[in-house]
Length: 111
Image 1 (cartoon, rainbow, N blue to C red):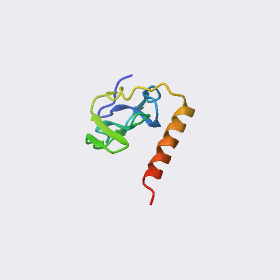
Image 2: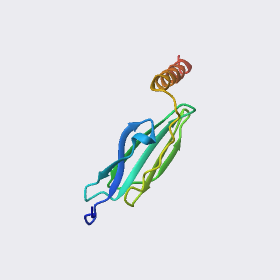
Image 3: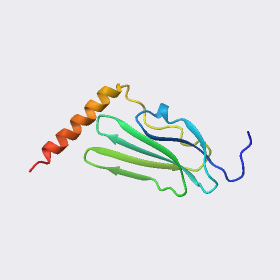
Image 4: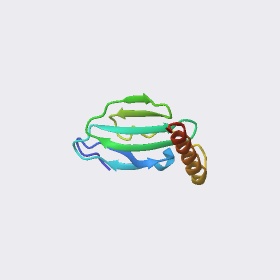
């Protein structure tokens, strides 16, 4: 299929724990200027990935105490293919790990 003028294609997904689940090709609306990948990686546990079409996009890297966040941008068709590698953990293990880390965080920040 031919590309329509000014129409960007990006991979999109919302809050996925595996990049393999972030390979849906989406035709962005005509105003989109970039493909945006937002990855939040909890220390030692898992990554959560969101990919989308973006009107404007600025790359950002932030290192929080319990997680790192990386927002990357690119402006070519389907340029945001790569992302975090899956950690091969089952969803139950991931849920347990996240729940445990949140519980520990709250216990440490007690009165």
